[in-house]
Every structure is written in C-alpha cells, then in structure tokens.
Length: 449
Image 1 (cartoon, rainbow, N blue to C red):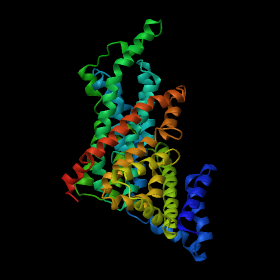
Image 2 (image 1 turned 135 degrees about the vertical axis):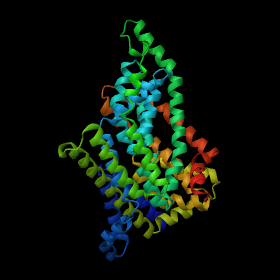
Image 3 (image 1 turned 90 degrees about the horizontal axis):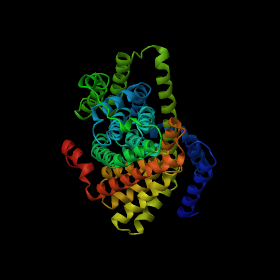
Image 4 (image 1 turned 180 degrees about the vertical axis):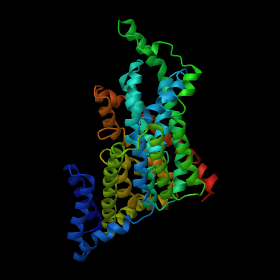
C-alpha cells in the first residue's frame, strides 16, 4: 500500500471513529493502536505505554495541570464578577462602555485563568444579565462575551501555546510574549466594535421603550461617585498583582514556565483564602476536583494525540504528506492560506489541543521550508483556532453561553458572534501584513532570532 493510500485510510478511519461519538482521546488511541496492529511490527504494541510516557515526559507539559489549577481557583471564585463590576464602574460614561468593560474583563480574566470556557462562564454570568438589563440586544451581549472568552488561548499563560511550543519545538517564553501584541489588537478591535455598536443598541432600547416596553437602564444616566469607584479596587488589584507577578517571574528569568505555573496556582489559592475566605476543605474541594478532572481529560487527549502522531511518523504518513505539499510548489502565501483553511475546517469538530498535535507533523515542515517564522505562525494559528471556538457547528464558547443564558436563541448567539469572526479575520490579515505585531515584543526583550 502506498504512503498516500495509507494516509488517506488513516484520515478516513479517524473521521469515522470520531463521528461515532467516541471521546476524542479514546478515538485517537483506538485508531493509532489499530494501525499499529495491522501495519507495524507486532512488537510495537508492547511499546505503547513506553511511547506515550516518553512523549509526555516533558517538563513543559508539567505546567499544564498547574495553570489549570490556577484557572480553576480564579474561575470558581467571585473574581470574575468583581472584575467586571469594577471595570464597568470606571468605564460606564464611555459610549458602549458596558461592552468595553466586558471585553477588558474577559482579557484580564483570560490572562489570569488561561481558559476560554472559564472566561466565558465567569464574565458572562455577570456580564450578560447586566447588558440585557440595560437594554442591549441578547445577540450582541452573547456575542461579545463569547468572542472575549476566546482571548483565553491567546493571552499568556495559554495552555494551547504550551502544546504548540512542544509540538513545534519553539521557545515557550518567546511564544507567550508574541501573544501579547495580537491579544491587545483583538481587544482594541472588539472594544472598537462595542463603541460603534453602542448607538444602534441605544436606539433599539429607545424604540422598545417608545412602543410601550420597559425602560431599560441603558436610557438612564448612571452615576458612580469617586468613593464608589475606589471601593471597587481592593477586590481587583490583588489579581492584577498576581498577573503582573507571574509575568515578572517568567520573563525576569526568576522562574521557568513550570515553576511560574506553580507559583501562580499557589498565589491564586492564597488570594482566594485572604479575599474571599475560601480555605476550608469543603470550599477547596470543587476547585481541586475540577482541576483534576480537566487535567486528566486534557493530558489523556495529549497522550493519545502524541501516540497518534508517532504512528503517523512511523508509517511515513506525515513525512509523505509534507513532501506532497512541498512538491505542489505553492507560493508562500497560498501555502499559508491553504493550511489556515485546513485549520478552520478542523475547527468545525476538533478542539485546539487536538488540532495542534494532529497537524503539526504535517504542516510545520512545509512552513519552515517556505521561510515562515514558526513563532509568528503559532500566533496566527492560535487566532484561527480562536475562531473555531465561536463558529458553528461545534463552537465550544457558543454552548457555554447557551448554558449561562438558555433563553437566548442559538440563532441569535450565532449572529451575535458573526461580526467578531470578521474582526478575527481582519486581525489575521493585519498579522500577515505587519508580522512585528507578534514578533516585535519577543525580539525586543529576548533578542532577534
């Protein structure tokens, strides 16, 4: 059987098993084990556990459960609601200030928690009801939270970037720094759209009121005294200090990424105990239980994905696919467009973790051959995978929003996120025309490659 035929069979079997409803980790493991049995030496089956262990015995991967613990500690606390309330108090006078407050709160929370679903849940549970109470349309309220939540895999620390750094054999510190500029770019684009949309939302609320509907708070002049604004700061500043402290420890050379993750998790638990009084075993149990479940699930997916990639490499599927792509002699930017389109398609039914680990052996060699900076590409790929979190049919953040606000029709949520998908496409184009948005900060701090 030729490599091309074997590769096509490998992909087809994978799709069939995944669409059967089997969990992703088990689907990848079953396919990999099956092909080892039929197409590799019988002795290879005896090395499955050894291969998985060796692939996962990475000090970089150790940071994943620690960052998950840090995110769970913050996500299970009222920190999201406090952060949102504080930003709204200070920004309510700006046109579209409530939408901007949601975007900023999502960005800051994402940088502390590192998880898109956790960001959606924590900020959305407070932000969506407040926006709807003030007359914002349900679709816009849902869309801006769903889009803001995607920043969780772009702004450091990002579990997705950790996996990309392992798969692409790139510097994690440089990759984290490269995510800051594009993260700020998306925050500015989302906030700018909130300002642009504010007038339309105001007129919608006014039209409802003039037709005999309820007068929303959006039509009233809110006012917060300086004392009220200052009183909101004490519950927020410690988490900002946590964020800054973790970044200084990582980029100041005081700690490795894994040590930084441990430091962040410990500080998050200490802050919860001091600020919210969360220290008793019954209070910590949901946090620790959630961390164990998510870490186990994610590491199982990683382990099976790495075994899946190992089989691809052993059977020369990934090498043949990469050579085939190179042999097409596509221009540099057409190659990039084809690969990103493939990532978008995979995003219809796969999470970012699986996309990275399954596609890296195939797409990275041609990109390296074409002269692309793999740090820059990692950021572009992350933004494209962010789109996968909010586009149908399996946009994870869409279902998180539906869980928070079940009365908002799914159609309204999807139309609500559509403008933000277009803004993400714009961000990708800007990164292509101005790559220094991503590479400038790491080059400045860590030196040019």
